[in-house]
Structures are given as structure tokens and as C-alpha cells.
Amino acid sequence: MESKEITISRGGLEGIYIAETTLCKIDGANGRLWYRGYPPIEVLAENSNYEEVSYLLLFGKLPNRKELSAFRERLKAERDVPPVVFDIVEEMSGRAHPMDVLRTCISSLSIYDEDPEDKSQQANIRRAIKLIAKTASIVAYMGRYRQGKDYVPPDSSLDHSANFLYMLTGKKPDEMAAKLIDLMFILHAEHGSNASTFSTLVTGSTLADVYAAVTAGGAATLKGPLHGGGADEAALRMMYSIGDPDNTETYIEEALEGGKRRIMGFGHRVYKAYDPRAKIVRKYLELYQERNPSEEVSRLLQIALRAEKLMLEKLSKTKGIWPNIDFFAGPLYRAIDVPAELFTPIFAASRMVGWCAHLFEYWQNNRLFRPLDNYVGEVDKKYVPSTRGSDPLAHTPGTDMGGWVWMHGLRCPGGTATIVVFTLRRYIYFQ
Ligand SMILES: CC(C)(COP(=O)(O)OP(=O)(O)OC[C@H]1O[C@@H](n2cnc3c(N)ncnc32)[C@H](O)[C@@H]1OP(=O)(O)O)[C@@H](O)C(=O)NCCC(=O)NCCS
Image (tube, rainbow, N blue to C red; front, top):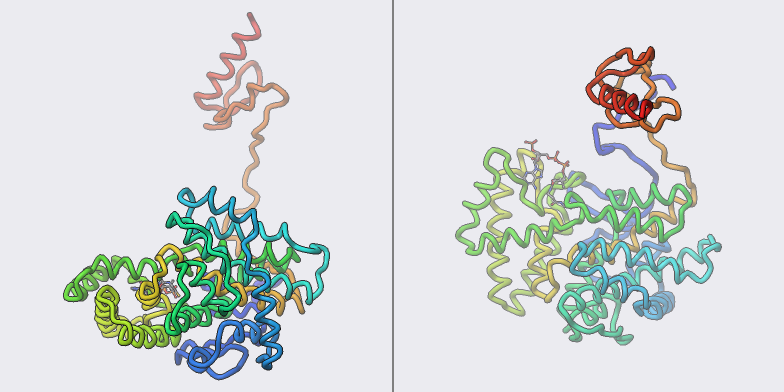
């Protein structure tokens, strides 16, 4: 290929379109987001629910009442945690990162597939429903087990996210708590070709199955702190370290001094404006705090708002750094009793639908991902054989260092190691 045809990424494929999609539009300059072209995310967050949004993402249209009810029933029927998952959670928890536990559990779901050879769209939708329903239950059990509590079986009278909270806390959530957790599921359901979705597509493009793609792609990639992995948890930890709201400004100033540290929950590769999801989270957090005042959440909220104000003054205009969805998420989760180590697993449980929907869309026109890398090394460098016939001593590491020496009439690689090896060999021969 002519070099003029090659586009070299600035790094991280920034600014490169990797596929066409009708799933999600992000207007990063103006901080706007649409799922499947429906009213902006604010409207869905206010009026929709996770099941409706999942249907919309998977099928490309809003369900009517009958379709929604049938979809809900299919999700409910898949909520049980399968036996192998109990073993994995119990064996790995405490020794492994929660995302490692979740990744292994998600991978294990493939053994329960009714017909692995069936690659039809219908079978893949069945798999997506299984993955969406079971991942939420698995995360809830991971949370229970970490707290030394027993498994809570699903409750079919509750919707998807309310049931998740129930399986985690053992308490049926009130209307407002159910709304908050549902909101987090909706806001995390989809977000274009971010790192985890992209890697899901890369794995899927080899025609590996759904389980492989969401395990290797989604769940594994989400672990990293520059994507899902703990930015919300880190932001919450920062708020706890600040402790008193009056310490906020000093803490942030010191952290930013000389570009020393990043403030987690700020900045985004695509949004160069206020992340609309962060605004929604902040709004509902304030509302919840107003209706259910808690001293701890009030302190966290004050710190968050003061940090936000300072960051906006310092970095929004100069570097395009604004709050992202993770910044207010921590205090919101704390308000409804969700432990910090589950923040990223909940992101995964919510995003499962986005990963699957992207994968199915990509498969309609599948093409193996195989980008190029721009080789900048030398070519035709001098070849120096590293093996020396069948003499096992000749393979001793280190014998090919340091140029050439002549020993026993043979031209050999030099270096102290060679001399030692050959002296030893001579000794063995003459014994
Ligand atoms: C998300 C993130 C990786 C996007 O990064 P990006 O698009 O590659 O932006 P860059 O890393 O090129 O940063 C651009 C500039 O902003 C600064 N910056 C970016 N995020 C920052 C943050 N959270 N706090 C302070 N400064 C930040 C960088 O230091 C850099 O400054 P410089 O130009 O003086 O070197 C980055 O903003 C980040 O690390 N944020 C914190 C982690 C986080 O919240 N992740 C969740 C995302 S939803």
C-alpha cells in the first residue's frame, strides 16, 4: 500500500471512525447524547426505565406495552445465579479484584448456552437477555458475599434495577432509591465505541461468540482506571480524604500543582463540554439528598460541588476538562447503600446491553479488525544464529554475547559465558 494512503492515528485511534452505527450519537462539543436517535438522554433518564432502554438498544425501536411486558418477563426468567458462579465468587473474592471475579463469572455463563452452534440473531438476542439478567444478579451476589451475607434470591415483583438493589441489600428499595439505581443503569447502558465496546467488537469481529466478546472485550477492558475501572470509586475516595468541605480547594490546588495528579471523575476523550450524564446524576443526587437528608451524603455533596466549581474555573476553558459521569456517581451510590468496590461491576452490568447491541449491529456487516502499525524499526539487520547444533551446552543463555572468538578451531560467539561453557565442555570430553 502506498504510504500516502495510510492514516496514522494520533494515538488511541483518537478522531478515527471505526464503524457506522445507529445506536448512539454523542455530541462531545455541546455535551449532548442520544440513544437510537430518541429524545436526548435527559428525557429518557426522566421518563424511561432500564428495560425499555435495553429493548430500544437491542431492537432499534421503542417497545409497545405488550413487547415491553414480554421482554421484562424474559429478563426475569433469567435472573437466577447459576451454580458455577457461586463457586467462582466464593473462591475468588478477597483474593482478586471484583472485575476479575465478574469477568470470570461472565465467561462461565457460556457453559449454560442451550445451543452454542446456533449463530442466528434470535439465539444471540436470547444470549444477550441471559447476560443482561444474570450479570446484575452476579454483581449483587458478589456484593453480598464480600459483606459476609447470604445470597438473596431474585424477586419477580421488582423491575430489573430495583431487583438488583434488593438482591444486594436484602431490602426492597423505596420508589426514590429504585429510581436512582435505574437511572444509573440507564445512563451506563450505552456510550458509543469507547474502549470496552471497541474491544468487544474487535473480539467479535473474529466471529468469536457473544460470551467471548463481552468477556475479553467488555468486562476485561472496563477494569482499567482510564475507562470504567474505578474513576468513580477514586473520586469518592478523594472526597473522603478531603473530609471537611472547607479543605476542598486546598486539596484540589495541591493535587493539580505542576500537573502532578489528575482529579478522577473529570475529563473525557469525547466530551469537551459538561458530560450530560454527570448533570443528570448531580440533579438526582441533590433531589435525593433534599428528600432523604443524610449527614454523610451532605458532606460528600458539598465537597463535590466545591471541587466541581474550582475545576471548572481552572480547567474547563483552558483544557476542556469537565466533570464526567463518574464524578457524582460515588456520592449517589453511597446514598443508596452501594459499596464502592461494586461501582465498576455495576457499570459492566448496565453496559452489557450496549456491548451486545453494538456486536449484533457490527455482525450484520462483519469485517475482521486488522489495523496496521507503522513499523519504525530497522530492517535487514545482521543475523547471528543463536543455536549451536545439538550440543545441549551450546544453548546456554548468554553464549551469544560479545562478538566472535575462536575455540577448538571453531568460530564462536564471544563473552565470558562462552569461555566458561567451552572450558566446561572440554573438561567433560576429556574425563
Ligand atoms: C478520561 C481521560 C483519560 C481522557 O483523557 P484524554 O482525552 O486522553 O486527555 P489527555 O490525557 O490528553 O489530557 C489533556 C490535558 O488535560 C489534563 N487532564 C485530563 N484529565 C484530567 C483530570 N482528570 N484532572 C486534571 N487534569 C486532567 C491532562 O493532564 C492534559 O494536560 P496537559 O495538556 O497539560 O498535558 C482523562 O481525562 C482522565 O484521565 N480522566 C480521569 C479518569 C476518569 O475520570 N475516567 C473516566 C472517564 S468517563
